[in-house]
Length: 405
Image (cartoon, rainbow, N blue to C red; front, side, top):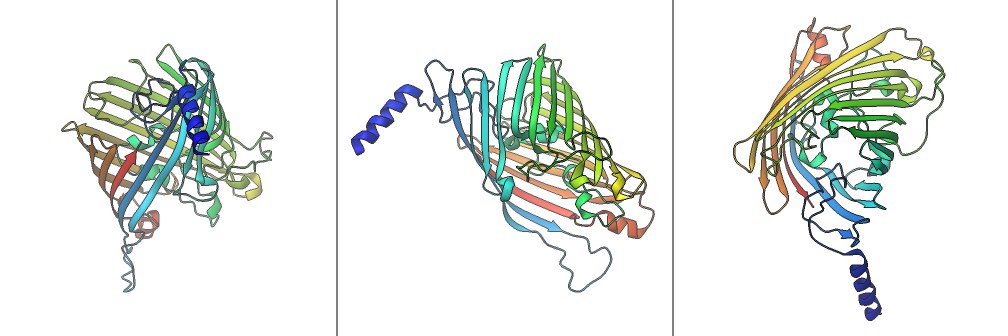
């Protein structure tokens, strides 16, 4: 039995070319950690037409959330909640190439449950750089904050203007969307034109990362499938913009990006509303500096069956900058704002934050720390001010240690 096993193993080694060398194919993608040009364990045929690359990303954090008591003065108020230790992501997956045309990726997030356990699963038919087709579960073409590589973000936590649900003056909790759309199931055509223009156009379920099955219907209001229709166009005059937000391996680059994106989620949130989103992005990488800013808009219009006539508009955005004071230490700052109560109600949330990233060379470790303060201004009444930040922490601190392979 042992002899058969060793014979089979040696045969596979010879056939596939097992190595711990650089993966030089720029098209091998993970959306989790960078793979091209990185040392690691991979399988590859001698001809290079088949590549199989496993990868791992683990992010574990210590978090502290301090919530405002909104002036209630309750003796049993727990101002500190949702604090302690957390594993936000425990990803294991593989990416690769087949037949020199097909790219693929499957990623499991063991820190999640249900359908969200499958973070992404897709294959990409790359006919040429200008024309590619992607099918499966992957990132929707919206928001630069989500499209960057997960393990290479400047802050361990995304802007709260993207991740927090909007407030509406109705007790319909199932229809409080976020501005972000994140991972979803669908099909997309995308490509790179003249090494400057990057486009993506796709159709998705519109149900997000937590649903892996087909649950949509036809729109009663519009008479079309109740799906998410999304597109993004990016202009990169100096070549393809890297997908990181500052890397110690890329301290002499000079690239920038301007992008427009839009989506329409038809009868989103179980036929409750039609959600239109639009976004404007800017990102600039210059040597040790990295700067990015986004502004986005959400128009939420209830369907006719809801018997609620008005539409609600929400807006948000952020600007953040990072600088490497040494080849291993990056300082970061961010300002985030969110009109969470819609344009109909006065008041804005703003969340300034500072951060520090330390890259532990040789061990694929990254230590990130941040502090964020939640401020409120412009509200007409104290009640509106108190209601605006419900569920959000006034003071937030996080220290995260990340390992990738």
